[in-house]
Amino acid sequence: MRESISISLPEALKAELDRFTQAEGISRSDLVREAVREYLFTRRFRALRQELMPYAEAQGIYSDEDVFRELS
Image 1 (tube, rainbow, N blue to C red):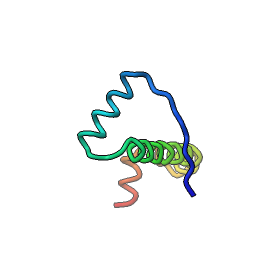
Image 2 (image 1 turned 90 degrees about the vertical axis):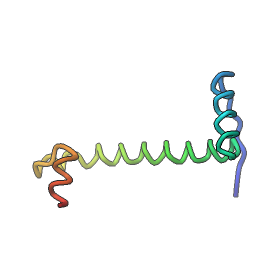
Image 3 (image 1 turned 135 degrees about the horizontal axis):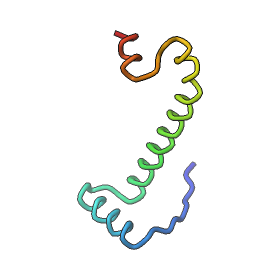
């Protein structure tokens, strides 16, 4: 089931949104839907990373390079 929402944007941001959607051949709704999906994914990823950091640090993993080294 879909639900509609309404948002307000500053004029300059709306103009940029319209230029981009026109150039890409997609609707405003499609762009905003994908942007919200990506934003929420990133927020969940960061929260999970923060939650798991103490466990990684306890095993000597402090950076992305440490993760890659362990996985290689």
